[in-house]
Length: 95
Length: 424
Image 1 (cartoon, chains in turn cyan, red):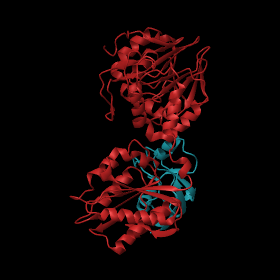
Image 2 (spheres, one colour; image 1 turned 60 degrees about the vertical axis):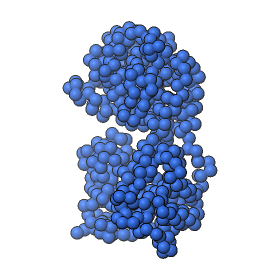
Image 3 (cartoon, one colour; image 1 turned 180 degrees about the vertical axis):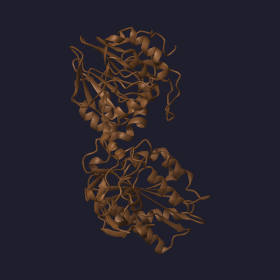
Image 4 (cartoon, one colour; image 1 turned 180 degrees about the horizontal axis):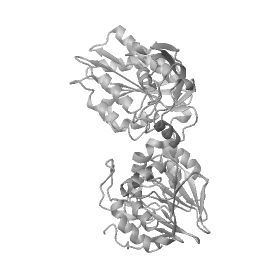
């Protein structure tokens, strides 16, 4: 299975993950500072800043896009409960 | 004397051309489940008349709509209403909105950007087409003819949608729940209702305190204004020395340790111990954390106090460690008492950890960790469970846990590379 690497800048941890993993599945396991609310892409609690490698995340769904807009999220931000890693290297930190 | 004695169905003038058209709810004893109300509450709504139109600012809880409409009708006709301002869409302020929109369909609704989704959700059951609404932010204005409403974007006080509205020419500030309290008295004004400090402070502590960063942002917008009167959505209207309440909010919301602790982090270790084993773990953890430098560690035995009194310590701490023995497969009650009383402070993103001695099954640590994550703390270091009496190597493990927590707090972590599969 293709692998990817995601780095949580706030805790200095890089994790090798299978492609297709969502950020939420990794961040909780390593204790990164991203916090979660509804876990369903509605509350925007898990807003995450993508420092680099945003192109290595699957494009946001219509729902995620709408929630990001409604919450006035700056560019380069994603919902960790929705964002799926598709390959390469990504660096993130809590918004 | 009945609380509502002397109050008629008519609106009450609070400034020339500005009326209170709210409702009193003197028999309410519990608000939103979490707040006690010794003499009930009020739902304050206001009407502002300009030469070109009339604005209604907020409404009331649905079952008090009749009171609201009677008072509104005493000072305005529905066809005169050009403007409806929604400072906060919680049902106790928007309950009469669907009916008001039917009676004044020509009115334009002004609300914050975040309130738009809530407005749609509120109007869903009515099946009505949403009214014309205009999202506004700080410095946006509505001209009522000789009178200007200017908006202040003050989110999270205490919902994402909240805003304040300033009547520029008169120096009147309509603040929604900010500066409000659950206090019911037909005399309406802060200089006539008697002492309501207990209610003002209680309301702040339970409603605004979790959002103190946003309180400070709002106060920064409010302080430069000329303020002759503050008209909140609950409780007395603040016409006597209104600025005192602004000062009090600033005082309550300002972090206590800011000046002394900006150069070091604060780790608070709470523990409780039946035979001294979890206490020894706590002491070793604290010693380990202090050895790293840049972290001030404090130890508190929960047996020496009751849950709620430690809330201040939690609010100011950067990191929190909780130590509990396991009794009957659970952490002990004083731990849960504390961990269930933290909704009044903001703990999101603080560092959390758990530890404890156990004799048999040792569930407490994992249960505490789950609760900490549920409270949105980050728990990057796995907790430590030690069977009965910690020996020298186990105390060393406690020291190491403290060191790791201190490194997290001070940003002195070594970069780690791991494989997700290893964490499963």
